[in-house]
Image (tube, rainbow, N blue to C red; front, top):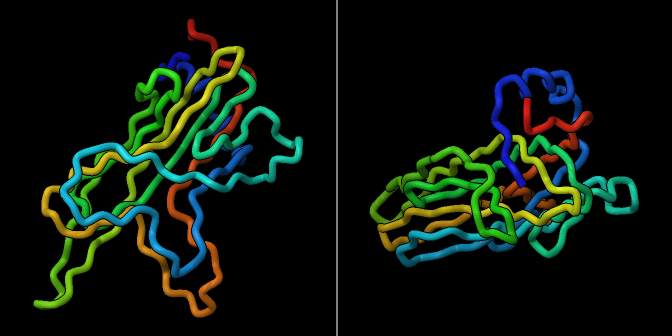
Length: 194
């Protein structure tokens, strides 16, 4: 696996990037259920996002990528354009990254963000939700590979923080989308020499 960041390769593929994504993956929960992960202790670590939904449905339309638990499994090697984002609240500094599941190494780094706590009154503290984003190109070997989205939290206040706050919809049955990953298979494949 090799991460490609060459400007020439990106320019050559701009027309491809403007096309819709082939695959969208998300971390979804039913409205009013607990947000994904809620902690109250100090925390300085990576947390794997709980990806659980893929569209279009895995019915042979896109056999080159599937969900394997929380992991994104590429069944076919190639060059892929990936964007992702994920929210956090009341956690101070945070960022996402895409990891190679076999090496446990970061292959795409996300933006560093800050999500402060805000005191509304002496009895009410709330958080501002901010999202970390990543964008990049990865090259997956011929036999495929497995990756996961992880979220780093630098939380030292000891208060509550979460990886998302649900919206207050009236019917309480709507799906809440937290983390998102969009993948586009690039064709032609960008070579290492470009």
